[in-house]
Image (cartoon, rainbow, N blue to C red; front, side):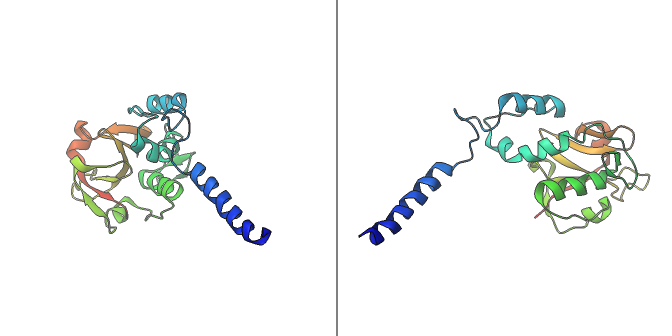
Length: 181
């Protein structure tokens, strides 16, 4: 008799464990992340974030990672927090947050097989590309879209910063955006 009960007991225990572990909520009352931590990230990045927004919830690893890079100085060819360039920052962030390996240069990233995305349909994590040199057709700058028109990138003059797509310079040098598959 105990041989028959044992399999049913194991199934019952597994069902209880499964039922109590499902769901994405991290806290009670519909809160997905600690409100103080989310508010601090929101202030640091300059974008509205909510601890009860499911889109913000799924993108919190990106927001947390890029916030740690803010203020890191620009260094051509750099790949560390001692100095980083735009493609190096994007390369490292994608590797850490999404476990995806991108090409090392912004031009090569722009040539990747990505889903084309219009400015009005950008989603958090999309790549945004610009042509900032005198040769206005050659893509030489990349950033990562955050939300509400804001993107993060390594600026040659200010290091890693958050900028807005509607800023004159970025509006003028905009080339395209893509969603990495």
